[in-house]
Length: 75
Image 1: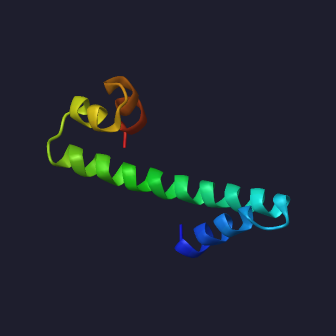
Image 2 (image 1 turned 135 degrees about the horizontal axis):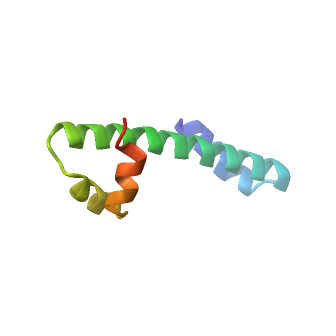
């Protein structure tokens, strides 16, 4: 997600067109979530490659060991 999209979304929230604001905010949220998901996946793979246990990764992500293994265990 680029910084410009986030600034546009935030500015739109203060604008005169609430529909445009909602669209921009939604798009920004989707982009941000995708970027965070990709970064998390890379970090999990790196942690596993470095020898971290599923339990340690789960603690860092504040989820159960089962949840993190289900999401990333096969990748």
